[in-house]
Image (cartoon, rainbow, N blue to C red; front, side, top):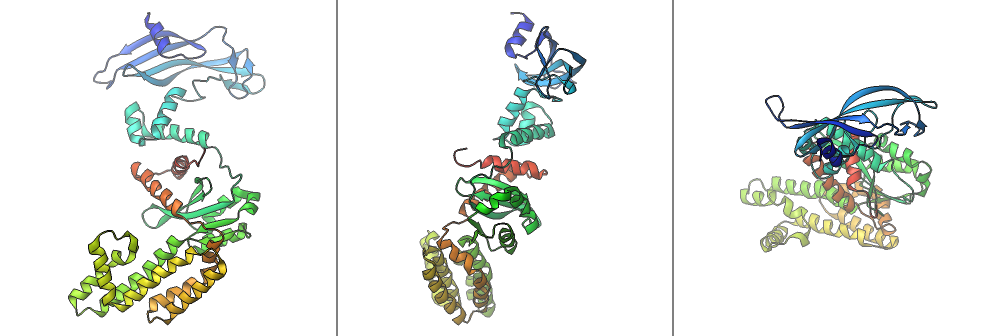
Length: 410
């Protein structure tokens, strides 16, 4: 088979034929072998306008371009393409429409597709190294493919929402994730966790705001206010995880520190209390080691303040087990009375601060939703960010997140 015949066999370029093939060996100025293929336009091939796809008879001008293609036989492959502009009577001078080469592209469509497929599993720098491309080129290719594949956010049929924040950078810089719990699909990601930062999502929803029935979130005043402004009919549901985490920070930690300070003259007792933070914060059922269960029992037997804070923490979690609002309100009233009757100032203050949020906790009876799905998504987001050593382009980062969670059945 002739050399040009082999090149044609290895890669077809619609509308063009192979005129010549040249292979250059690796050398001091060429780190890898290269194959250069000169293409020529086929006579009689129907030209089409890249703007309107109409068949055009006349060529406006021709300019040769150098385009990268998939490697052949471990050699970087370059094409010399006489790129034609057609004289379209409807659109004016436009590039010829080619299925294998996008307008103004410097890589073929199949190389672009291969790069995008590999980017789904491998960091940009490794893909760039594999294809011997600049990492910025790889990023732009992947970003264009993600935009084309994902398209605009489809909010049709969305009735429930989960909202949570995650750290996007050091220095308390956050982004907000909004998920449809019915399909486990990431609908929207935006930088910030203020009212203004999540407003574009509700503007995207538009009339669909009236269809939202419930929104699950942490006890964020900004989130709640923005939801109330756009979806006044929606129930606000506060998640168990965030309330208990807040209890751990504001009650367990504070009581533990106060008790450690009170016992500062007893070095052994002070050390036992100071080193018991994770023992007190973990759920009892998650203490798998017998030695940890014994330590916890001995600690609570020896310290009444820690016992009170620990028991009320476990009891508070039962508030999310109720299915009837009246029963949940009775349980809350009993728990609140016990908290206020304790002599623990951090516990009393927490109970007073939690009281205005009771409506969102009671709403869990009607809408038994939680943000555990979002916590799992946020963990995956951390993996995506860590694998890429961070992202400088928010839009690209958020597209990668949407692509990782397209939803069930999509």
